[in-house]
Length: 582
Image 1 (cartoon, rainbow, N blue to C red):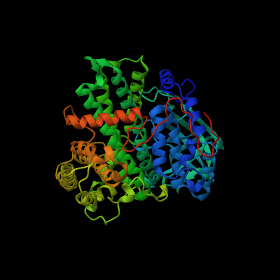
Image 2: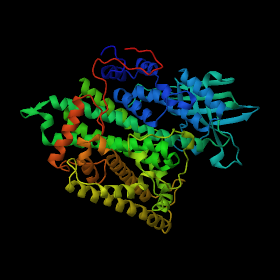
Image 3: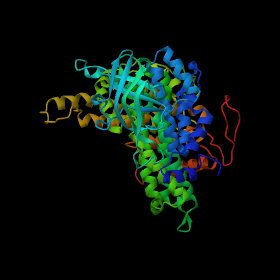
């Protein structure tokens, strides 16, 4: 629709001009997107972490420039994590009035992801702090109203990990000095986003701008990143949906060799495999969202696992879909092709957001000894709340997230119980004995693989300790073999999540989901995000392809459950606190 400020064609036009999608951002704000980042107990609409996942997914499916520009609201989560009661109430009221456009200002030009090396200073001075330095590159650096930043408050005698403090600075409340925007930089994707920076020159702020205690900044930063990395999966799911939907629609109408191009066996299987990857990615995302409520303290491992694997599932899909689209992938004129190209460019940045893939994997690798030590000592639990999509969840309490989860991960811990539940299933019309036998075998392979991977942790550590260290000026010394184990655990984590979702929802989702053929195909993959031509049995490829097309025709998300999208020309639904509008 020409009046739709979040149309694909409009997004493309603005993207070609590197222009911020102001109308789309206004539309999302008018809907009340900001309210879903304020907990219900503080007057907002944040009841379930999945609400943020789904809203982000919906917006990213249309325009990542809008999604990324407005999802900076998530950084107000740091006020709920580190703020006192007065700060939480104050910032909640400001967000609910629509008066906050925050940016996250951690990285500096010379240090990137090495936050401990930052040189931005926040000098204490008579009940105030004097902020000096530059943060770059960051999203919304120039156009933000509030800046979440790290600044050095300690001196040379302060331990390195306690030198920085966190501040939430209202740019309109600067007492003295100057805050200026650093010019935008051209980017490969997110061409309409304000990827820029912010500079402080002797800017004085009241001490009430500090979140948490002095010296607690790095810890608060890491705690916040564990949550936001998990929410990044919504961006991947949104771009992944549009890329598959766009290519599938084009190839269904493209006539080649006397028939629709999507009926060429290679094309059919490629689309089926891409659809299967989205189902697995969704399972991993949904379980992570539920885990944020149930096992908040465990996300030092979990948040990294979810972000890495969901981004990998979608990124691998993008390469396969580009190849399947063929020469049309290189043409920019047609709307459908331009949309695919834009989503491919924009979606690629998710693996960099809130800690790049190498940073996430390194964080995982450092925690592998604790994970290996805790393995096999997990208490028996009722895993239904984690996997049953109908189960009620406790309140989401972001302040409970811990920077070190002591090697605990509920998804891995649930595997023995999932295997026992699978063993107790009886054959049905949906899932016969032959498929149950295969699934049981695959589940046992998951257990063996997990045991083997965690046993390798100590072997690698002993191997590394027994070798002479190569001279290096870098303080980062994580053995690449541990990084490799972290990668393989990310793959395994998504498979276990998919198994759990299937076991606890097959009784009510039924049909395609319940028969388990999709799950069998997913568990058969070596690396769940990778696939090759000929991997799928033709009948399995056909059924996955048919399910994907049925959801596309019914205006549904590519999902394990029916989630309806608005049809063309539909009027926009508004939250109860807003009056209805088109």
